[in-house]
Length: 175
Image 1: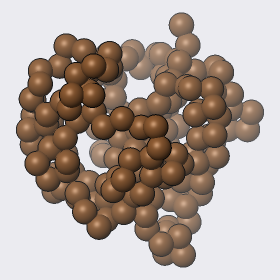
Image 2: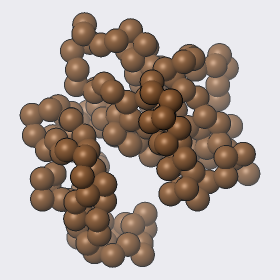
Image 3: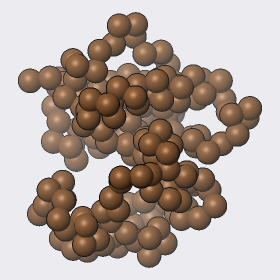
Image 4: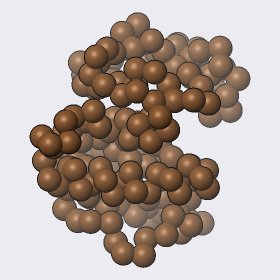
């Protein structure tokens, strides 16, 4: 079975390691079935082939897709550019992709959505989330209760969904 590629941008060891453990635990993944790359410390390896992976998971980081490129930390700008360089193949080949925090901003931006800090930011806290009618039809969410608590926290958000994307979940502050 192919491993999952996990790309991380968090420079703090404790935060990065905690995020990685959460991906393993909540995703039901065995560490031996993943390839973790901390883009804050290294570049994507030459010759990396997405065909070698079952899917791609992109975590969070201190920056935002919507930050002014001229003000981005050089390491963050490089890491974001490297992930953006993978996105055409990910979407063209329909590679399974989970974007958390920074990762969802990258996906939405790549697909033509609007990502900014204008609305829908949320402090770190648990919030009740509700599955939309479209989400209730989606096999990805099968078995989830209609309303459940999730831990959120994000400075920026997708303001408008990209074309052909479906709105699966809502919360009071981030409809």
